[in-house]
Image 1 (cartoon, rainbow, N blue to C red):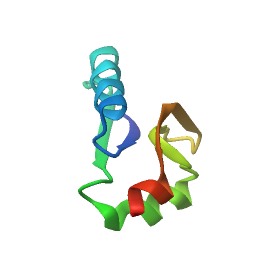
Image 2 (image 1 turned 135 degrees about the vertical axis):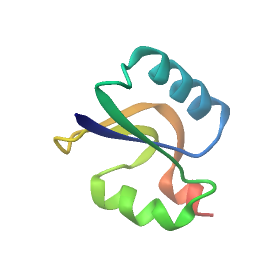
Image 3 (image 1 turned 180 degrees about the vertical axis):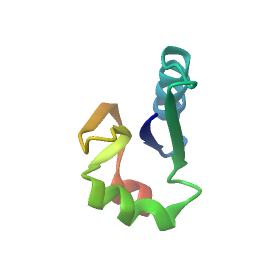
Image 4 (image 1 turned 90 degrees about the vertical axis):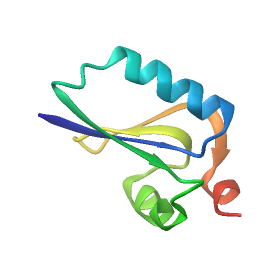
Length: 79
């Protein structure tokens, strides 16, 4: 099973992107981990190490990061 992590900060852009993504992906074949960085600020450093620069972003199991639209930078989320 493939694993992906969807990072967001809870803003309208992020929530919309999350819902659209979940409507597209087959969760029986893809393990989707949703991380709300606005509520889980301790995960920001993990997102940074994965290459996330802004949210919403999707980190694939092969290490590629897909930045979707632009809701906020990680610095904005951090503050």
